[in-house]
Picture (cartoon, one colour):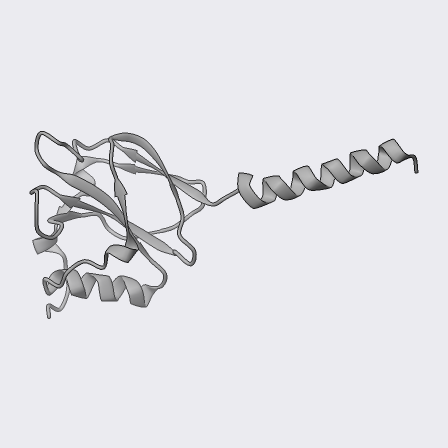
Length: 139
């Protein structure tokens, strides 16, 4: 094997390694077709991540009982339209949270969905349901 062939193989290997380490990170896209977030209306929007069905259940119970939101599971969405988000390690489920008031806990949510890397999730206004209508057994 010639020296140039070895160099080409080495460069190919390095390029493949760099791309696999950085270029193929797991992301999801949110196609936000709602009027949130809005500075004029003081609304905010975020994605809540969960690592298991038990974490989903715990997050639902906490929300229904009025407990503060665990912000370590939340990623803010700061604009409408398409937003690309990096999937946190171990995330298996996501839902959208919306605050229609400037303070307090979220008052609108979507259903939980499974995280599928490189998928685009479309969010429309009619996908958002009031937290007070969340089904469950209560506190």
